[in-house]
Length: 213
Image (cartoon, rainbow, N blue to C red; front, side):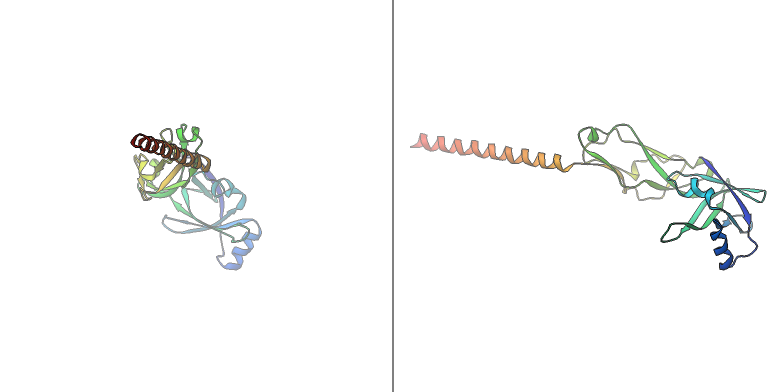
């Protein structure tokens, strides 16, 4: 698992006015939970770029005025209009306590359905995993080399070794959609086949009537 370092500074005041001032100075008010006591601190907003503005999962190395903590980001709040980071909650890691994280799904192999003209549609980009910190994967890799047209991979297809999947196993991760052109082509072939079959039946009936006459 990759690690992102965040350097923080303890907060003396916890009021709304102080939080507003910190944000105006491009800092993020934060809280660290999970230890003996909560630690209120702030950190430069620019340090969160590789943590919250990326699809990748990461552990966090917090350095708060010289004290270091291993953590994960537990919750973030964004401004509803400009998406500026308003607040961040961190959870301190303990080797013997399982944690929950959203882990990205990656794909390997070539789907036959895509080769035939289909399109790989990713329905779920991350899955929720519960594991001890040492067993938490950085990503989940799924093999799509068996996906034909119209076929799907589900959460239940993930090989969950040393961790627990918290999503419903029936949830679709990715599917190979059948393009409209292929669908219409199949429909046209079916109609053409039906017309040919109908013409053959009509010809047989005409032949029978002629022989009877």
